[in-house]
Length: 116
Image (tube, rainbow, N blue to C red; front, side, top):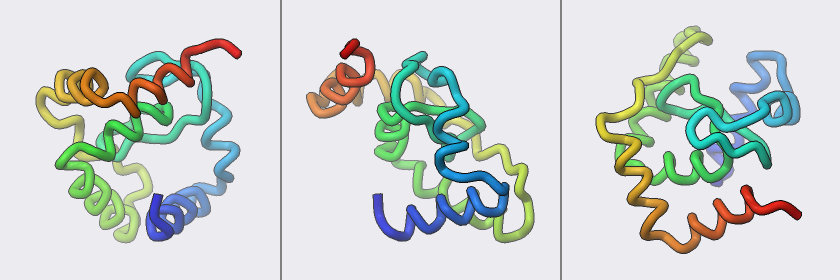
């Protein structure tokens, strides 16, 4: 995560009156994959709360930068209830292929689903 992204995330939390801990600890499971461990963040594409694995995969998508920039513009224009640009077509299939062929993503998934 870049320092610019951290500042942007902190800005979003501040305007909603929440802390990072509030945002990551209130969710019981990932809206996309169902993982119940680790922290959760809101997707840039829609209102899904996602685990670290799903956020990592999402950030690799070619439209992620467009979604992030659009959200930043909406928030700066005062729209604090922006719902995102929506998941791109065939996103689920694309995400499955990313996970299937990337050992680092598989390792991250395993760390989130394996019991201690």
